[in-house]
Length: 251
Image 1 (cartoon, rainbow, N blue to C red):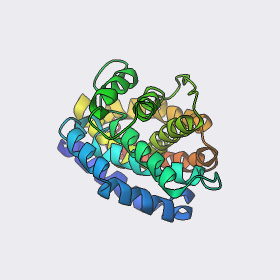
Image 2 (cartoon, rainbow, N blue to C red):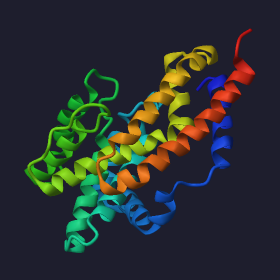
Image 3 (cartoon, rainbow, N blue to C red):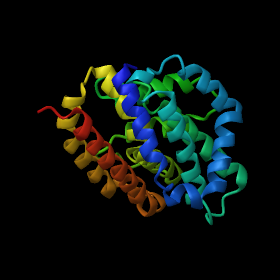
């Protein structure tokens, strides 16, 4: 990452550190801890992580850091949403593992046109060697196909697969909170060769896009806690914008 982008990322992280964690991350510590343990210890997740790590381009801002965060939040959302559904713990864990796979694979084709569709196809190919049923592979593929913002999703015919799909979408859109300003934006800025002045010009448009995400969450938990996550990110973004105007605005 170039020096200016690195400096701006450090400033963004300093600003973000002053803000309280959104409620999702304080209320659901137990599901998040369970999701994290699965991500780092489940044999399938460990194996898949090893496969995708060399493929991801961290410079795009949607590499392994992003996918890790999406995977953990997706699995946690599945655990939260299945509470009281009378599913056995092994069944819940199985769905959480599928959510972990979704998170790891959802941006595997980020550099390609129509990346959600291409990623869905690539996920099917990558998962063929895993201990998954055809329905489970289709579930992951469908969820990836449906994870793009502002694109109408294709409903699943199976309730459990719909749940995984909706949780992947919400976990991915949680990244429109602090993550986009502490990590993703600066990698994208560096990768695309955007200077501070151009970033200042694009900033209001980007903030309006973040605001639009608030109405799109798909799970009950996402609809309850997602807006706060995005609004938290927008507050961080406003401070960063003021910093940019103060230090980089021409004339």
